[in-house]
Image (cartoon, rainbow, N blue to C red; front, side):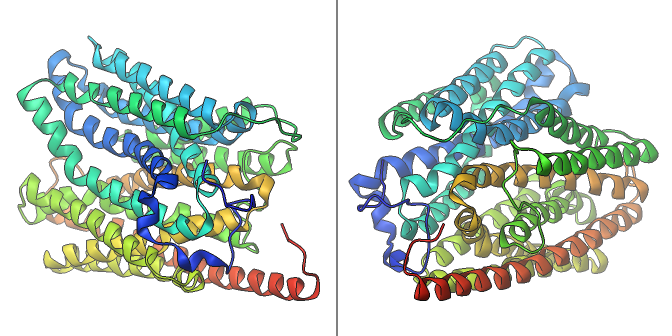
Length: 496
């Protein structure tokens, strides 16, 4: 385990030696295995997403069940979010090492079930286990970043993970398509198993065994976890309903369940969410709003942009898909540049620029739909990717830093979970918006344009809200740092 040399908590961050971090340190013997382990954990999630989305339609052709196709993605997402919400509690109870090994075995079991499936319901069972395992893996890997690396290298780790996502965006569909076309869709599913086996071996070698802790292990809040899962499930189901009123009713019910569950969780002695989650007077609370709202706004492009390029400008699937790859590439390149900045304070001050670029990118997409100028689409995608690249890694690190030590695992595990929830809520909300504007498979071009204008206009409004929270997060973080500096000058003792 790569802790700080003097035994201090590696999760503590501040204006110390962080500027000395170099990319090459990630490849040095004392950090290389940890880097590979965490990046492989992210790769399992990223590549699996592209492998399955490419190969699954072919699987459906083999044994039918097209009506259940969307459920293969819905169940995966819902159980990934539940797994992420469960991760911090399970990690505290059994330790990171045992949790990761168990989650990887669950993922392998799900992959094996889906690979050997002879019917669509069996695929759904496999996807359920895949989602549960991956949700835990992604959340625990986030929680391990400040434990396995000194603060100066944390930005570099997030930059490395951005590279993994970009590689998956480019190589995932290509590899899966090749395996599906020239071998079998089962091969595209199966390739996850050897990758998971390597991940388990690395976890055994790198992640230390659980040590005895004086901290009381909290009971697993099954009712609240079930409520969170039900809320996300209703959101996903609402996106499949054709009737606009039924869709709206499901969406409102889901949001009511989630909001009420959050209120109950705040009053609970054994909460799932970290203290101060979504509070507008704390940098942790406003930062979590950004983590939710940015993916929520960007879901407009994830769901409808490729479709719009194909039907409004007659782009082919490959050319239309290039827009998504362009966004991923912009995200990764910007993340690498920001992670290379030597000043931590400068990176924090740039957090609000991320939501700003997202807003500008969505405005570009809106104007592209309105004016018919397709080149604005690619400019908008570059801006959106850069927006995430500018702020995502730094914001994630900041939220870990401002959390109390006892709450840090909850915060770390919440980040990927909340991101997935944002995409799920966004897909449902924009689906409702498009359907209410007459969007349909056989809709005329003018109707499609009108529906997409409404979708991207609402996305712009949501991105403005994320910008407001971005500006407030920077101000609150600066105020907290200034207060701590004044206290340290008077009382030179460590502050939690």
